[in-house]
Amino acid sequence: MKYVLDTSVVIEKVVSKLIKDKEIKKGTVIVPQLVIAELENQANNGLEIGFIGLDELQEIRSLIDNKDLKLEFAGKRPTDSQIKRAKS
Image (cartoon, rainbow, N blue to C red; front, side):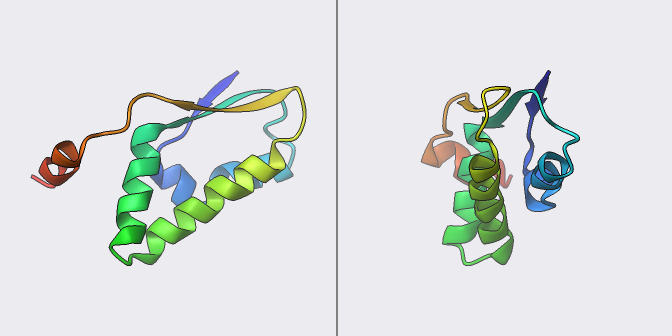
């Protein structure tokens, strides 16, 4: 099973809860680089939501400590230009 995370799922701390509750036990948790860049951008702009998301990613990483569940980062990071134009 593969679980591809989006920003809202990370911010709401859904995945760490599912892992703790043993609802997610096997498979691969995939975090797109775009999600990481978005959270970092929010945190760099002083938005608490960015810090919450980054903390959740660390929590997920700490919970994935067995061979049946893996964490992967996928995709390319957006360029600065793409990030600036995303608002429009």
